[in-house]
Image (tube, rainbow, N blue to C red; front, side, top):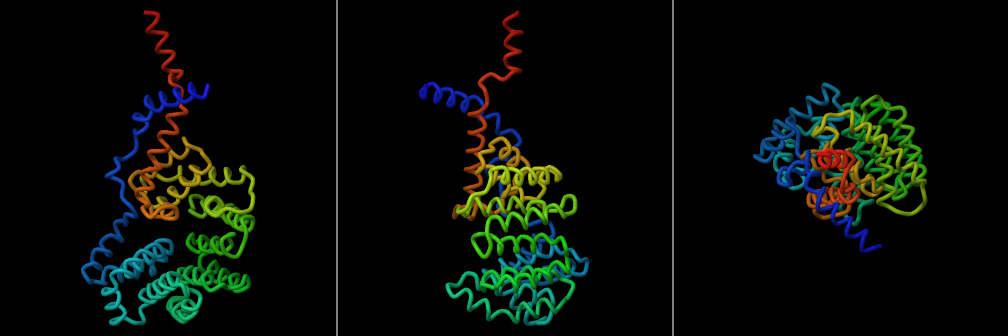
Length: 338
């Protein structure tokens, strides 16, 4: 019987795997962390040493209160400045009090502090930069997202965390970046528990606006649980988190770069839950937009990991598809009748 099952599985894989590639871009068409049409030119200009487009982009997001875009762009620009700092140094020289430059300066300092073995000590030293960024535009919630990341690295108490969280939501009740950072603080890997993390995520998702990425917070909590280990949560709670994120993903167009990270994260969780068909559906919706997170948490080659798992999911779906579907059997009857 084990041999028969293995033969049937192999036959299914051979028959169905090729056709399951429909709707999936070729491997060489999948790109990692592709910038959108607004960020791309700013990064290209920064690579040439020109900070002007980046400054204009962040100023536009601040003036229009595009806080989600502002957070994403600041994160990517700060990451670029880590390896290519010349353009950013020039910006600080000519405009040391620019609110957008101050935000990047704080984000960059916190990221660098996280990389050091003396993390807590170095992060405490950059606290004045957070204050400067927050005071530069009191409306802006993004410095408070940076402050929440900073709090996690400095072993801030729950009371300190609650104060920072209050400042963040006072500026933007539904800012996804602040919620994601708070969720990490409350996770079992840091200063909370799996239950506390899920409770926070589920409350926030229930209060979120339709289509808000905050509805993906429970699946982020599921990722923290599955990637961390320790403790026991009911499988039903993980499936509910995934189902909510599946519904959110369906509300966006296929191959939309905006929810790409959420879709990549959801796909990881679906794979861990062995929901193979759902995972394949998400790979199709992701299209060419692979993201480093969450694949960089399990591999030094996130794009390679993405493509390898995409192939693996196709194989798993194929292995569970009957050799002859209902349609195939009906067509066979017609043929036999002739």
